[in-house]
Length: 151
Image (cartoon, rainbow, N blue to C red; front, side, top):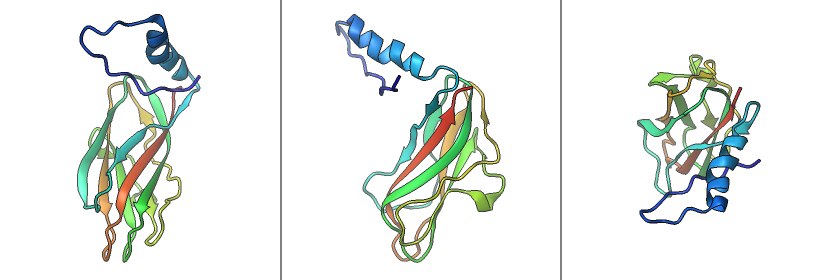
């Protein structure tokens, strides 16, 4: 079963069985135990990056395990690497700071980074910090992707 971005309902909309099945039933089946999800936690858009704290916000309605984090940029930074941090309830999940997701200067793709803290409880909030940007060109269009397993 594949996850579908949830529908935004509008007032007086007629809800059919097909709509409910796609956006409710199928999504519940997609997050059954053992499922792996890859939500995008943060996307900066087509703007030059700047350092920031607590950007993007994902509140999970179920317990899960964060397996890895991958960061990419549409326009590579130059002069310095792009480094992001992922926080659980405002505390870093990368207690070994050298393991934070990093995109090497002049590259668009970072490698998968495995956090030190991986357990996520129902209701926890995950955010992203942009800790470092390129010193010559900051980089643009940052996307941070989480790989989450539902136990």
